[in-house]
Length: 238
Image 1: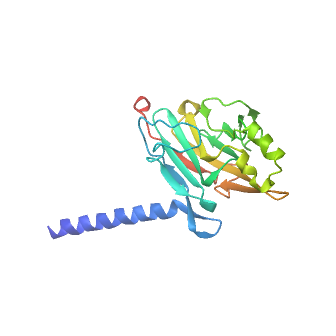
Image 2: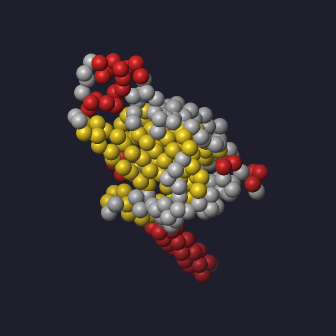
Image 3: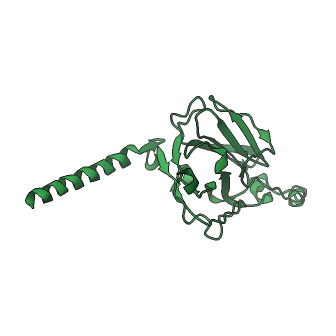
């Protein structure tokens, strides 16, 4: 009995040590900030019967079941999937209008998809190095929420001589960007992706662009530092 207990204790210690080591090697520091960590690989949680509307409002508990984590400047990445759709969300630290975003994603390291969101949706397809070119108003098997401009309000704003540092007020406010990507776009359940976005701010007569990449050391030459995603296996894939 003592031998059995000792064996079980050793097994528990080994399992616990392995899990801690896996967790330790699964995270790396970002931008030398001790409070921000990015996972190298992620098991995307499986959800069912999700009704995500790509309006940028993150409403009606749409993302409650997603894996979420903070990145630089309090942006939030959301990830979840069901048998048909991979959901990716980019939550803003505060509601805003102008934000250009691009996701690059691959399931075979040969075909790289660039998913672009600005005033419209665009897509590019390449190998490595990953493309920086895309066709606007072309989005096959995915959707998101582009910037919507209220032209009448914009004209009134300009006519009233309002300050440019309130530029964002002429746009429809959004809480973030919501992506729904049909899994028929991918050849298997293991993906790699990187996401980048640009926040445009107007202060007085100056236009400032805050540029973000997740992860920050991701390259377009290869996917060595891209994030690996493991999607849930569906019944028809067993």
